[in-house]
Image (cartoon, rainbow, N blue to C red; front, top):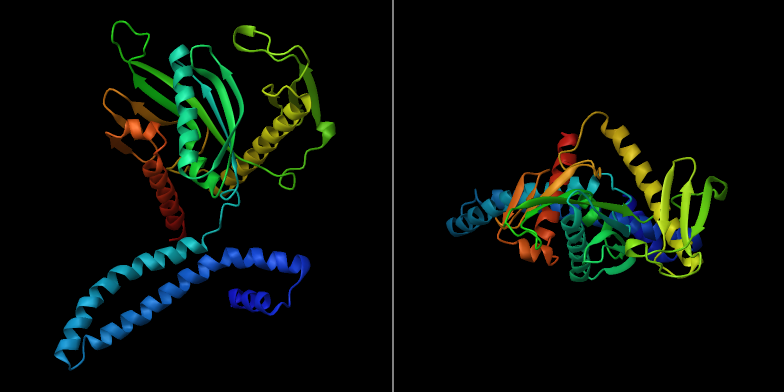
Length: 344
């Protein structure tokens, strides 16, 4: 078994240098698979032993075995499912950090206020999970709303837990500026991109057009008097990224390149995923920013995720405070179920 070979090689010190690093990485990837298989095998052996005992001559032992047999039979299918999940091809982006971008959509000032609340929701969620949340850029409206905002989130399994947040988030509520008490519907768009390293995406400097300009704030107000803002155009793809949050042109360029690299990496991921899925569309969703994925209805206190037909009542305040794991876990479970179904 490959796992045993790697374990022995690492234990004996036979592997050094790059070979040791590669073997350690492979061992880490195989360890949960090997553990799941070991648990399943032990459960099968226990089940066989209990079945034999349940048919024995000792009445007391037979009764005890029969009681434990039902629990063992119930547990085995879940262990087998865990093995199948462990053997599924991994999304190599799942363990990456992420760049999250939130933009106000339809709805004017109310959409911008909602975009700001969503951005803060993800910041609180990052705090609850012990992730680092670093603001990259915020374009404010002047009344507490955000036209757009972006941040880098660093930690364990960030992209795996946030990748299904990409899409259109819709809010239904009475805006603070509404005098007639009417419910308005507004929207904000979220994009979650896996943070790509230089080794993941090679960018040729000759493919870039870099423009510098003077930073400006809300309403065109000048932020600083130097040409520190940077706009990078990736000529082959047509992607354009701007950064003006920093006073340093060098820092803004570095941030813009980070976002550009993430967008190119995600575009390639989506292309490969589409090719694999052909014309089949996942129930969980494509991650397309134009896809409406969730509605936040404040008057009814409910949150509905349209991809999995999940509605959560009475927890909207906690949800906006960053407690979003109930929906995140449901989305991950649905994706796992779909991928397992493809193997049948």
